[in-house]
Image 1 (tube, one colour):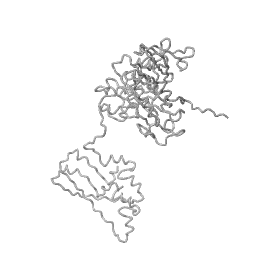
Image 2 (cartoon, helix red, strand yellow):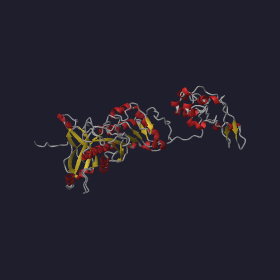
Image 3 (cartoon, one colour):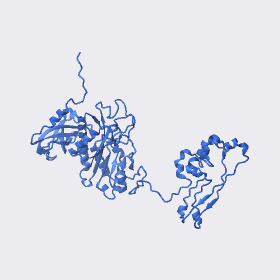
Image 4 (tube, one colour):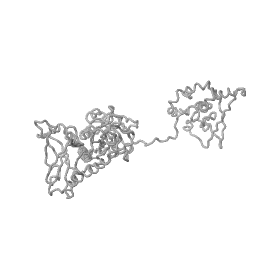
Length: 531
């Protein structure tokens, strides 16, 4: 019985040393290798290679057109399958470097019929028309591309158990370091260097929220060039993953079980006017226009936030549109459209945004996080005011609303109803005043009535007359004012002792304004401090 041949599909059987020896071979003089790249019917990149005279690489216009079998990419019928590749943008080829002063090239193309008409999937053609004649707007785009890396089974993300999920929750992996947190860093770093070599304006990268998920950023790029650079970066990404023998997907929700984060293609936008003084007003006007056409945008490039309702906010990553806090504070900058999904067509996204923000005015929309509309700045943290006119502990009442039903400790009274029989009558407290100077009637109103001296134990008290201590000694008490102890020592007690009221001491060294004098915290019966 012969041994069966074991095969692992997709793994390269070649020795890296053999590949390196092939790559080291020199290119003949006077020629270059050009890789023509285009988008297929579903938005993936395809490419084919040709040899050209070196002088042809001097400009896009000097490059020849080419063709491919469109019936094999769902871009043409079988009986008329020829699709023409039209060169649009030249990049250096990072996969075929050379040291003789000549560069092999990558060529980003769009697709046409032999008659010269753009084919139905040529979204670059439509986007270019949106930017045509608006060069003075100097529209910048910065595009964030998220992606997920899988093993070659296309089921198990990097860092995941085979057939299972990570035991630790997401969030630990975002911008992370360490072998237990970051999966695929070498791939992203390789992409980064290859893209920069090619001439793609990669501006950053980081590990994302879900393990195995990564992100890089392209831009800022002007106009149609944003789509060209993003598409070429996707091609380079796929080629790098090919070398690492790792499957890469741009699917916006590759893992549907477990509540793991999806992937997006957040798009940052600004015009020349938005980046200049007073630009915030132009940003808001653009956002109002985007809100008016929210449904149209969702139809053409999907939505990462999974929310049919349009919103915008300052530093709000849950909104459709986010304004960075520094943009809001400085009154100029850019905004971020967070709706595009990770596999969106960048030509469609940038072209649609351009079409909308250059359109007619739209009605005002209030920001989702309640920043005052029309303000040019917002503080990064709450400012402390001199006087806050809140009486009876109103803000604290809201904080502890879950513990209270009515006023004066009503919720706590219900909780301890079995230990309380009656509420004692509170006696008025005399006031002892100490002053180094005569105190006016106005000054004397600014006093903190300490009641019966129990409020200082607020963390130990629930109601009045030692209620907190009553809770602590509940096993020894049945009523109020030591009723349980009274039963125990009934033979030694003949009457209920009268509690002496606690004095209130007022201190004042300077006149107090009418505004200040209104800020009196009435502690009532000792329960409002828990409000």
